[in-house]
Length: 249
Image 1 (tube, rainbow, N blue to C red):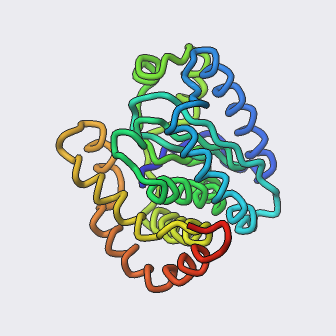
Image 2 (cartoon, rainbow, N blue to C red):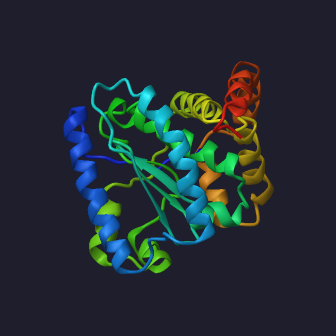
């Protein structure tokens, strides 16, 4: 899935990187709140938060960085097909992603699990300062952010600081896909939804310049679908066991 990236923080250790991201995240959330763009009440927001809460315990268990993450999720009211995770587990999902693609809860779980994996695997740190903010996202300029979300110039500046037009490597994307569907399976969401998300992306390709931009900078979606299909025999039994548990579904 598409990822927003970050530069100028090469050499930061995990704790420092997480603290810096947390400060920036707090500023962005505060500014977005002041513009009325933080969504806490819609059905979309309720669904995203519910899925996030179910995945979170498994993300906590999967953290091998040696530094506990303080996972946070905010839902941003915006038409953008966008979601991201900062170092240390600071996340956002844009309502446009859920609503335009008509995502099921399991498909939301596929997106969140994928982004959680980028943070857990510290792909940003491994890419020597190119990628600190991760995201299932389009890359867009500050003016576009301001026009589409209503953020003020301070928030736009922070997001621009943390975003450059470079995708994660194919191996990192594959890793995020693989661990992401494992997390969702553990939480009781059907991992096959990792396939249907990309099928939906393919279905809207050509009807939206935004989606074309997203898909043109990241691995071929059919290749990703094929790789996820190959993993289903391994993760489906985990999903089936979890779905039989009292809290599974």
